Length: 85
Image 1 (tube, rainbow, N blue to C red):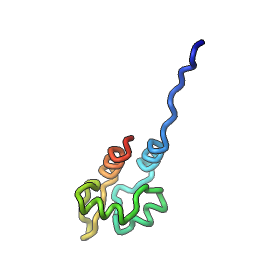
Image 2 (cartoon, rainbow, N blue to C red):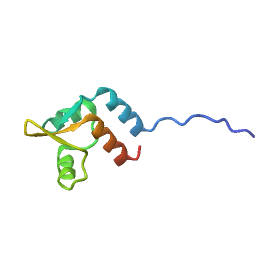
Image 3 (spheres, one colour):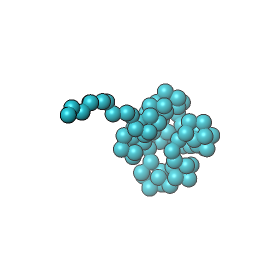
Image 4 (tube, rainbow, N blue to C red):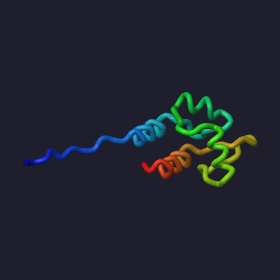
């Protein structure tokens, strides 16, 4: 009996990251994280991002006007590695 070979469907994580690649602004301002999370479906809370930053486990960040910001590409690279995508 032959099995039909089909392409595997993208996982939910891959779909989320593909969505974020096209929708997120170039800089993700951490002080607006709740708004960004609600609008784009970001998977981690503001508090979790702050904790990860304090332990050096968060994505690459920079200061913009004295506030923490994550470049979109750095955040997505970090998210992929963290979620195993």
